[in-house]
Image 1 (cartoon, helix red, strand yellow):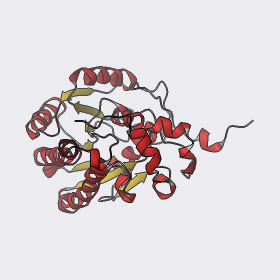
Image 2: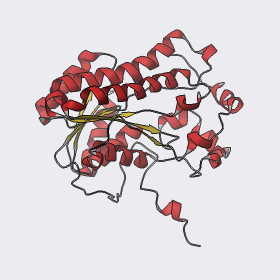
Image 3: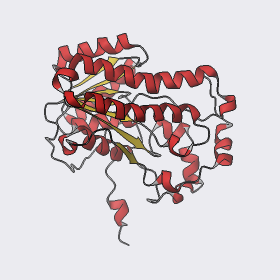
Image 4: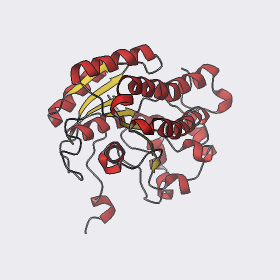
Length: 299
């Protein structure tokens, strides 16, 4: 039997935090030749695949998070797979001084920053009544303050005088008031507004600011922690128009478009990449409460 067209069109991916063993370019391999991308949360999940795909298109990268051991391991994999340079740097996006030090190190080692990917985030499932004040605050500090902190530092140290592209990684949680997600949905809604404000203010400096809002993406910690495997086994993805979860490479391709000259006249835009999920999938409170009951919401 012939393979369904929609399956054949899926790009390569792996569920683990490893690089792909093969890759098919849909853009020119030189699309980002000799550019430099600074990626927060770049050592795992979607962030790692974004780094890999950008590097496969000629870009050097900085991957930044709090865990230097994981970053160093990831950087080695990325360099072997792509032949490009990857610099792992320790950053806590809640602390601007750590971002400033990392950006200074980037400019010293790589000489420039062309692309900023704000991917660092924290999330879990929790009813609002069970959510501690500190847990809510912490998610906003990482997702919202972290995005602003990193954007402001990179803008002041480089983009203001040289231009650049910022891509914020968001989510569709706030579009319908997703159950058990008041913390992350609020943080991402703020980021969506921030994208528009910064696009307006920084456009005259040649800075484009856009957002990618993924849906359920397989092979990620978020997919596992937010009940993606259980939802898949229960047939929940059948309500998505494209009938499946997305994969990390698909998200990386969307970022590649927004970060590259392919979208040179696009700014202030929020691109939803969820297979149509937010339009049709049930906001199933009972199912989500069942998933959340076995998870901790402490931070």
